[in-house]
Image (cartoon, rainbow, N blue to C red; front, side, top):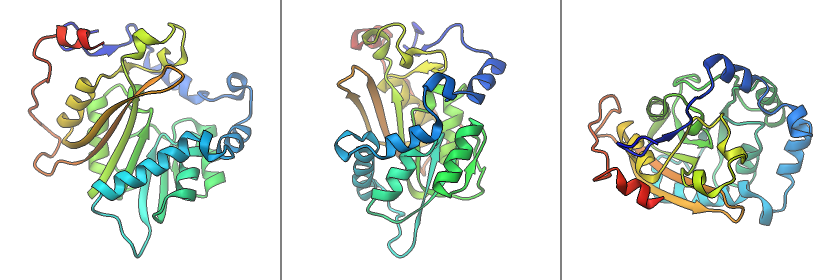
Length: 260
């Protein structure tokens, strides 16, 4: 942890070559003990009471109604799911959202990008994230457990802002730094693919630096001991995200450690 600002990160971390290799086989059947199609069918067939994706869909509909001014009633809205995996969240969202959607996805692991494209019949870019891949704007951008994998989180958030339509909404989930002290040291949430860990202070700071207007930033503690941060934001039209001057919210570094 940085003693000046409280930011937490892995040190040492994986090299670019190692990261590329990791995501080439990130969800390999050898590690998961089930095929990608078996995983897709198992997760998408969960009853609503057990499906985190269904609960997330209901939560997103409520947030969209509250914060998203660009939704259209007479035609499909556009959702962009960044790092789609095999598409289980998008499948649930398209099936159960109260709004009509046209979906786009991005997934760096080739096998899962191909699976999502085949099972969902939507455009899927097999790539690491960068802005303007689809050369269009989106009403909703979702990044579920993605930002902690980025080597440049502020640049990543600036890209999302660039891809977001005026009046659109961004929804982000990341693991909380609290997991560093609450989970066993060998827990998957603490693996080296997670380059960094966020507190409410550091995530909020980065979002503001990227030119986002924060509407909600909450910590959620799950029954299994995992702790997530949920960020809901729109474009800050007063800042373009290129050079935003934001004061870090902690008065002294010790504030952060006391909060953990």
